[in-house]
Length: 105
Image 1 (cartoon, rainbow, N blue to C red):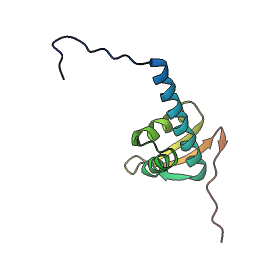
Image 2: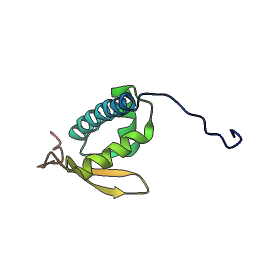
Image 3: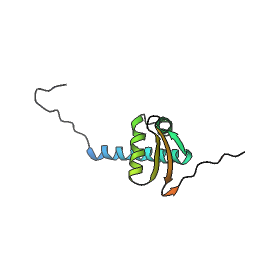
Image 4: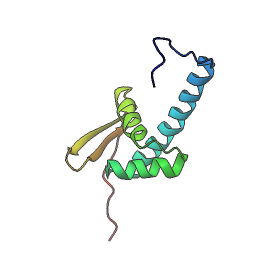
């Protein structure tokens, strides 16, 4: 939509908006870490679906973004097994190595 050179101004509280973004990111972060603790190897879509169910937040790319952010912050570490399949494998959570689950006979 064009406004003949005039820019429309919106009056909203930026602090409130940023606080809301932080709250949402925090909820997603907790869900991502919880998922990573329960899954040694996973597909990105499994993570997305888990985060949606756990948080009710319907922003599919958010789980991926938060996964990368947590890695950048060194809160988790993982390796990409297959980019084509979006397959990941956990290395560590909170600096503690993650071990592959052992099948019980």
